[in-house]
Length: 264
Image 1 (cartoon, rainbow, N blue to C red):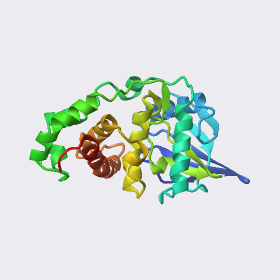
Image 2 (cartoon, rainbow, N blue to C red; image 1 turned 45 degrees about the vertical axis):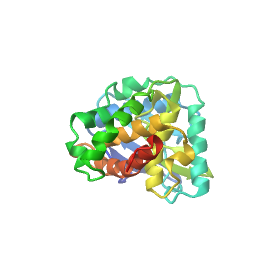
Image 3 (tube, rainbow, N blue to C red; image 1 turned 90 degrees about the vertical axis):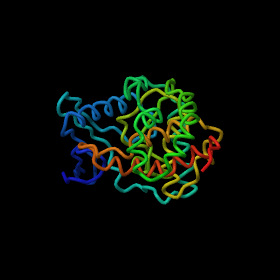
Image 4 (cartoon, helix red, strand yellow; image 1 turned 180 degrees about the vertical axis):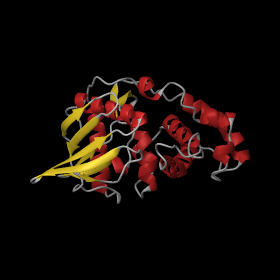
């Protein structure tokens, strides 16, 4: 069994091989990674027909859960985002959203108070320190951003992934597979799709509104999520998350500006 690098948490990751058979093994190393891994195991068990890797085995132990899935190291991982890769990703996401699954609702997994633009209004210092806009612009735009954000419903009955990024998406035999299911829940499918689009645009893909037009409430919610977090101190158990959030905010904020017709 050989260790492999990757991911944004300190969970241990390995590739195990017996003859020509290979498997990817993830093992919890902290209380946070144990909670996330148990949630991921639950998602794999209920989303049997989802566009995800084959579940080969698991141990949902409270302190040391282990997940074993098919090894996808030989798959094609975007970027670059070709037209085929974008189409395959959309097809996989739509297939997921069309399923029925016994997952926890959004609020049970992610909480009811996620901050967003309201949190930025309460303390704009971390957001403004990123240098993406001016204080005057923020004060002028906040009422529209907060109103649009509040109009975005996080509740829903569709199975959603809620961590869609290129490092969680790969192509196998022409079809997209989605990995890392710790954030999966029942929620609003438009919001799940919209949560992916800023990272797609950052990596050279189409702008968000080319895939999800007429969605000012989603643009406001997604941009607010990143705006409230991207400038905060690094997370001890996930030190690379803030960098990724800054990248996604750099395309999510212009999307919100365009969607809400806010002045530059």
